[in-house]
Length: 142
Image (cartoon, rainbow, N blue to C red; front, top):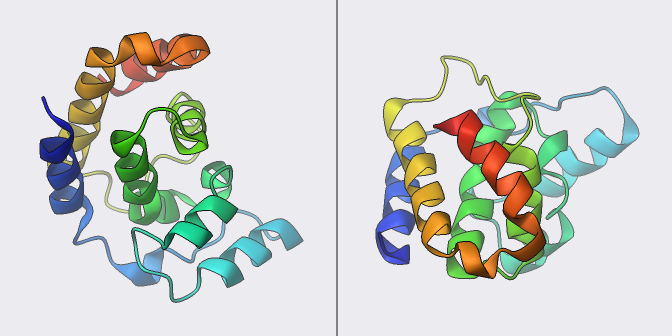
């Protein structure tokens, strides 16, 4: 499994997620409103500046928001495991909190996530302290 194959699988699998679902906020709170306002009108993969600002905020997104914006984290993590995006992604994927988007995840989306894990398994030596979260997340999504 190579990074470009995983990247394409992610983009193909998540490319049809409707953007209007992305801005459904998870909570009625100021932090979620700020995140909603920041992401309003942003493309699915997010520009680098926005992605850096929200790198720890994946857990705050609604189920649909996660389904729409997950590729932003996956693509950055595939490009380099030595990023906060990889850390944040492992912690989020390790959780069972808000991963049931309307209509569920497609088989292609779940396969793309499994491809991501297969690639990360090949890079396990680069994960350091993240191995624990990686293992639990892998079990959850397998």
